[in-house]
Length: 300
Image 1 (cartoon, rainbow, N blue to C red):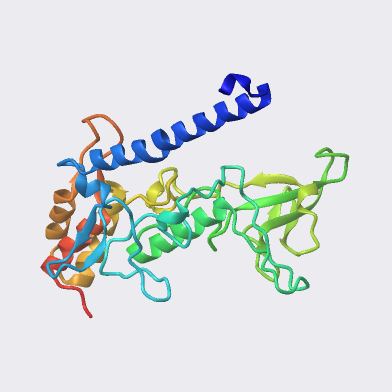
Image 2 (cartoon, rainbow, N blue to C red):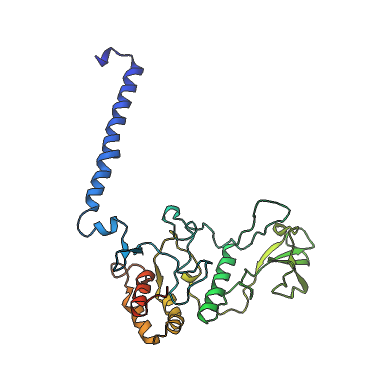
């Protein structure tokens, strides 16, 4: 019967049959097969989200998705270990899992122009985000929060250097601290014998030579890298053992516990390398904080 149909009709019928077959196989059979596999013993918990519940059955989070331990204003709660930063939505949003997509060359902040009403154009560079986070962690945990290429005020130490000649040739005529908006006081007084100015919204930063100043911060900062950078997914529930150890004294002091007891709790909640050789040991923050609340219950 189909042989009597025109060629174009036979082609369309063949395409329709292929569509129906793949709809059944890929749209129905395959998802149902995966769902069935996910319900096998050992996989069921992970497939359902690895929810963590309290003794009363109330869910408090997931062992696979991180969360913030902050108050209503976004300030860290001192009695809890803090998670690493997250760029997923407003933080640890599984529906917006992503990285910031900012790279090492992102060192110049953008400031909002008051003349542009209704639109906030301000944006912190990755460098300034790292500097500000390191300073905040240092203040919270009582350590040196300085990092290379950061100013004392917690922004990227970046200059725009303008020359008399074409391009970057000739003597230096003007220097602007690109991440310090006027009337801020620049982190450097002079550069190449020329006074350093704060930045105004009319400065053409692109025309200047970009110079990043290392400063006198230690080569190995006291604040670990995972305390100031977000993960690729934005959902990591773990922190490094170095970041956990950094927070031990603060948590022990606030909770009135011996430092050794809190350190032992960190060790108890430290997972080794995957398969014995992949990655680094890590600490699940939610599990660790639940362990703390078992010792000294959270205040309501």
